[in-house]
Image (cartoon, rainbow, N blue to C red):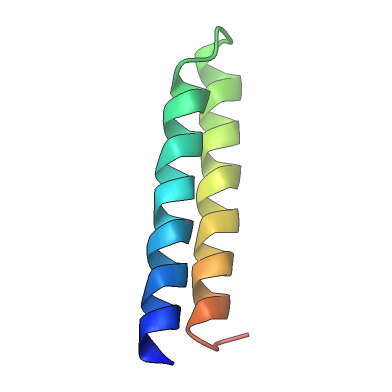
Length: 55
């Protein structure tokens, strides 16, 4: 049980980092890039909280 939760958290964390890296490589202006990064971080935090059974 605990191992599956840890694996899920790890996979979610790695996906968040990958998406943030790919967003940083996009050829868009800095303001739009910052907005997209904030949205990705918020979605990532919400999904991590789901693994911890907060929601």
